[in-house]
Image (cartoon, rainbow, N blue to C red; front, side, top):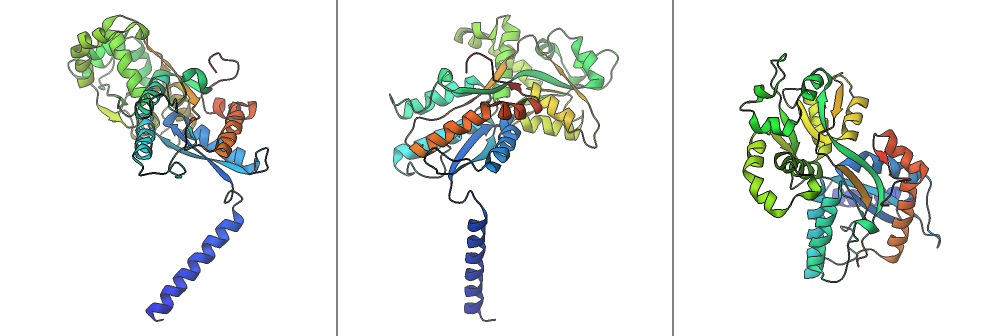
Length: 341
């Protein structure tokens, strides 16, 4: 076969494949609701999308739409959206570019506030990113320590794990008296993971003796040296909470024996134990947070009228009994009946 004939054959085959995909996929001509979520909502979003899309949903004007999910660490979600918004302001990316998400969610309200302030700095007075009060609550999960069951009793004996990290000289110093196995502590990178950022705030709360909401800038400056000591005992950092929990379940206690993750991460790890058969327990620290995951619908030029309408219907589905059932089955806490959304 000559080069010219082979090239024509490849082009024709490609057109046939594209044509076939377009005709068989009912979503091909629909409105895409691209949902960029933090790692805690990955499975929830994926399963909800599968269920919603099977229903072939349509807007009031008859236009079909579908949900598509993408999950990253919450810090990376913020960075991606801010980067896209920057390109929009510079004129290097049009508002209708498919790169922009229609809906956004981060694994906690600290990162939502960061997203709002950083986009507001690019577009003063525009209010493209709604605040917490204007973003519908989808689900939530408290921060916990994820520990293998055979180590949990000993870890519970420590009144404050962060203070123990501060005074420990080696990883073996963290182990209970009846155990020779060192305790390796892991957490999310605070600049990329919401659980990592919240863990960092909890560490400041532990060493200062103050509640997280009472911490001031001067407190942060004053207690930085002690928190740095705690951080020096961290074995490794993960890019997202979900990745930390999965790696811990997969790699065993010598990779990590304590991880700062979400309650839902522990429930999911126990539901998917597979060959490891390791069972984990959730230990609730003294200074903890409940991470609220919200649906952030930008009031921005990259969200068209039809996309906004489709996003609003998607939020309705995610908050419906059908959608909330998916969340609770994954170990997340439901949003229905709670205040603040």
